Structures are given as structure tokens and as C-alpha cells.
Image 1 (cartoon, rainbow, N blue to C red):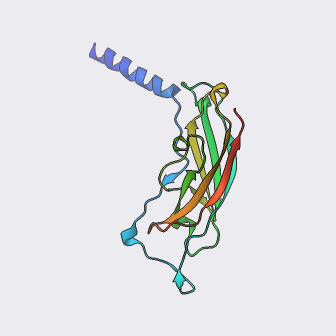
Image 2 (cartoon, rainbow, N blue to C red):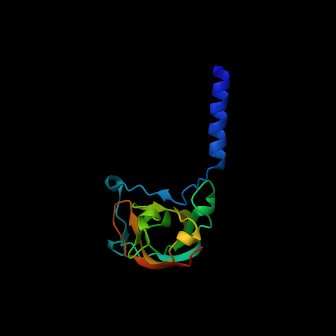
Image 3 (cartoon, rainbow, N blue to C red):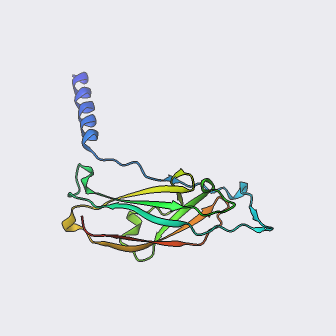
Amino acid sequence: MKFLLSSVLLLSFVASNAIACSFAPGYFTFEATPSKFQTKMDEGHIALLPAPVASVKSISRGKAAPGASCEDAGIIELIITWPHSPYGLEEVGFYFQSDNGFEPDLIFPLGPVTGEIKGNQASFMFVWLDGHPKHQKKLDFNVNVFAVNKGLQVGQPTTVNIKAKKG
């Protein structure tokens, strides 16, 4: 009897997880380490962080009501291009802050993050519960993007517009 009950519980757990939707975050937590940080110099002056160049790669909207599929997810993909700097792209993280947004706390993380780095570009994917188009709002807001180094020095922001119709 114990074996049968254990088998049923295990099977129901596996089956419920198989139909659930899960996205891995499209970014990684940036870890600042001020106590170990060494300031970089640029022509005899403390190097400042430049404003990154941010662009929207894609925006997809949810197509179904919240439930057991991934069709209710909204996805924003952003590309950050890092300009010339004494700090390499692998040495900085980025804050993404909405300045007039659509529930920004549900889309962007509150702390700095890093993305998938290729050369001088980093890609980021932000996922949120968007729901069915009849319950969505159009997206039209700005996101300020700024770099931070491991010493917690913050750079100048750049702004990218997030704009999309209902799904």
C-alpha cells in the first residue's frame, strides 16, 4: 500500500511539473565587491563609466490567459552595446529602471544584472506574466539603463523606449 501511494504521489508530482511553464531568467545577478575593488585610471583621472547603448531586440506579448502554458508570458529582449572604457563589459552590471512604466517591478529586476556577453554586447531577456490580449495594456514606456561597477560606481544612463501593441 505504501508503495502504491508513493508511486501515485510521485507520478502526480512529475505530471504536474511537466505541464507547468518555467523560464530561466535571461540575466544573471551582478555581485558588487567594494572591499576588493580597485579603481581604474584613464589618462591620470579616475575612469568614469560611460552610458551604454541600449536597443530593443524583440518584444513578444502573451497570447493566452494565465494557466498551465507559456503562452501567457510577455518577453522583452534588450541588447546593450558597451562603448570603449577602461572597464570591460564583464566588469560591470546594469540597472534597468522604468521612468513612467507599466508595472516595471514585474518586468525588470530591482538590482543590477549582467547578460549573456558576446564581444562588446550583452543580451538580456525579461519575462513577465502578460496574460491574454483582452486583459493587456499596450506597452509604451521608457527604461533608463545604466552601468555599475564592482565598486558601486554608477555610470550615466541611456534611455530605451519599450513600445508594443496588445498581443
